Length: 123
Image (cartoon, rainbow, N blue to C red; front, side, top):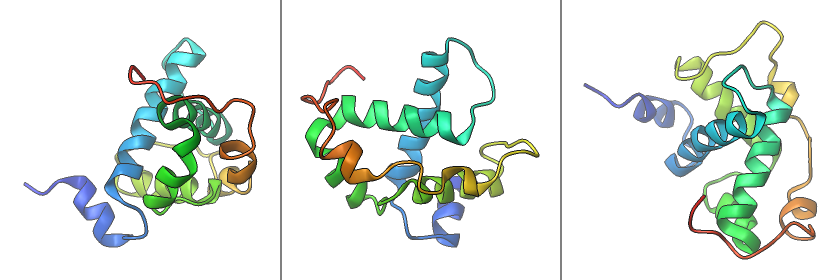
């Protein structure tokens, strides 16, 4: 039986498998931050992505994301909608890929942010 992620990667090879796994982890992290398991909006997920990236990778966040082919919040939108197309994530009628468009600048968040700390190993 083929791994569904292999199918996603074959259709859109722009992003490394780690980026897809990271989005999955960030979704769980975001639900935990919200205190409940429910539908998460694109902006909520992007905030969770920012939070977990800074906690895991600290000042190396930008380099790690770039090594996975992820350079903008739009790239995370493409990843999410690739997972939706593969039926590995679901969406509502209101969800749009544009929800991920230019939500924040990676340099501002991952290079110049006051939130950057040393990576944590327990996240």
